[in-house]
Image (tube, rainbow, N blue to C red; front, side, top):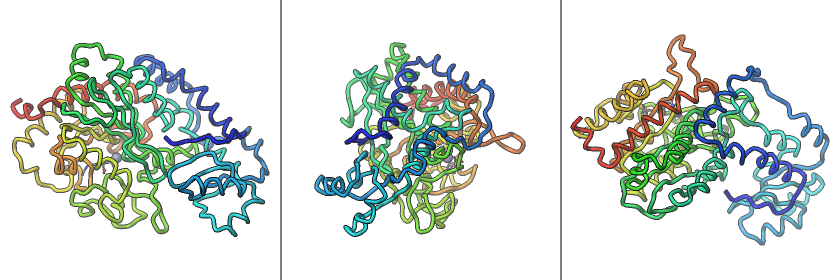
Length: 445
Ligand code: 0X9
Ligand code: ZN
């Protein structure tokens, strides 16, 4: 994350303190303590899901004449000029800066033809910056909390863990990847068989972040267990809990869920591309929409989106990858290709591998294993692409709840489902790792 704090303003110090007070304590909990604390939060009396004002901040910045703006700036000279025009620069990315500007300085911006990407009153920005999951779901990790936890895992296990970004999102967030490998760090290639666990292609599917993230916590806490030790020394394991952090943050940005699915690309008149329709697997044919406003919008072209491109480039750079799970919600299903057409994959041996591994993971979770397109055909999905392009045995998990008529299924099942989902899915993920060394052996089962 490129976040340079170039001046200490009231707001910047306030926001950093807010992060600092929470992160270290939460990040040092053990797997069991963490899961218990997450359930305990759920057992607290439920708070109605209403927009919660942040009165102190609102009051402090009431009638404040300043704005939070994001401005295009790609060089240090451009950034210097913006300071001279009265902007206090708080955040820097390769192409833009964000910061605070007094409204009386804004006319000068217009005359000097500065490219303003977005602007809002500081009071509005401050309130949205402090919004988070509704309080009854505070146990779920937002982007910052996910990063803090991944960072803590790296710090505590620096001999075998590295944390790196596979690329930036539309809104310039990093797509974080935790790697576990006893002999290769960072992006250094490995010839060990690789496994990838991905969450949150879809913004509102927040449980799909918790499952891979807490699997990482579990694995590292149990790193001295004989089987885990074997995985760490013989495999190349990647955990990417939030493929779509822009969407996930947007979904909780008002303190009330927005039921958002897509990324945050700006279309003409609407926003977002469905990242699980944007891969180059019969792109935008069945089960995807050409309409930019649709939830299943496939984008203007295959791999038009920085998030799916980041996954593509990550996969293509690593021919050692053998297995993958992309977590979604909901339905309690374990899906294997094809998803884009109704036919079976042509290789009968691989089909057996998919079926047997899916069945093994289904036994451990109580989920149902089936061909993806038996649910519905949808082209452009990540798992079809990973198998077709790279021969990876890639599974889509639809986590809890089960849903169905009267089943009360939603994307927001509450923090109470985290513990069982995580525990069951730790077992399924271990099953996948057992099959990662040589997945095709599973054909014989
Ligand atoms: O539609 C999707 O992308 C996935 N379901 S979700 O409710 N999480 O959106 C399912 C993807 C499974 N793949 C195919 N059926 N192609
Ligand atoms: Zn999904």
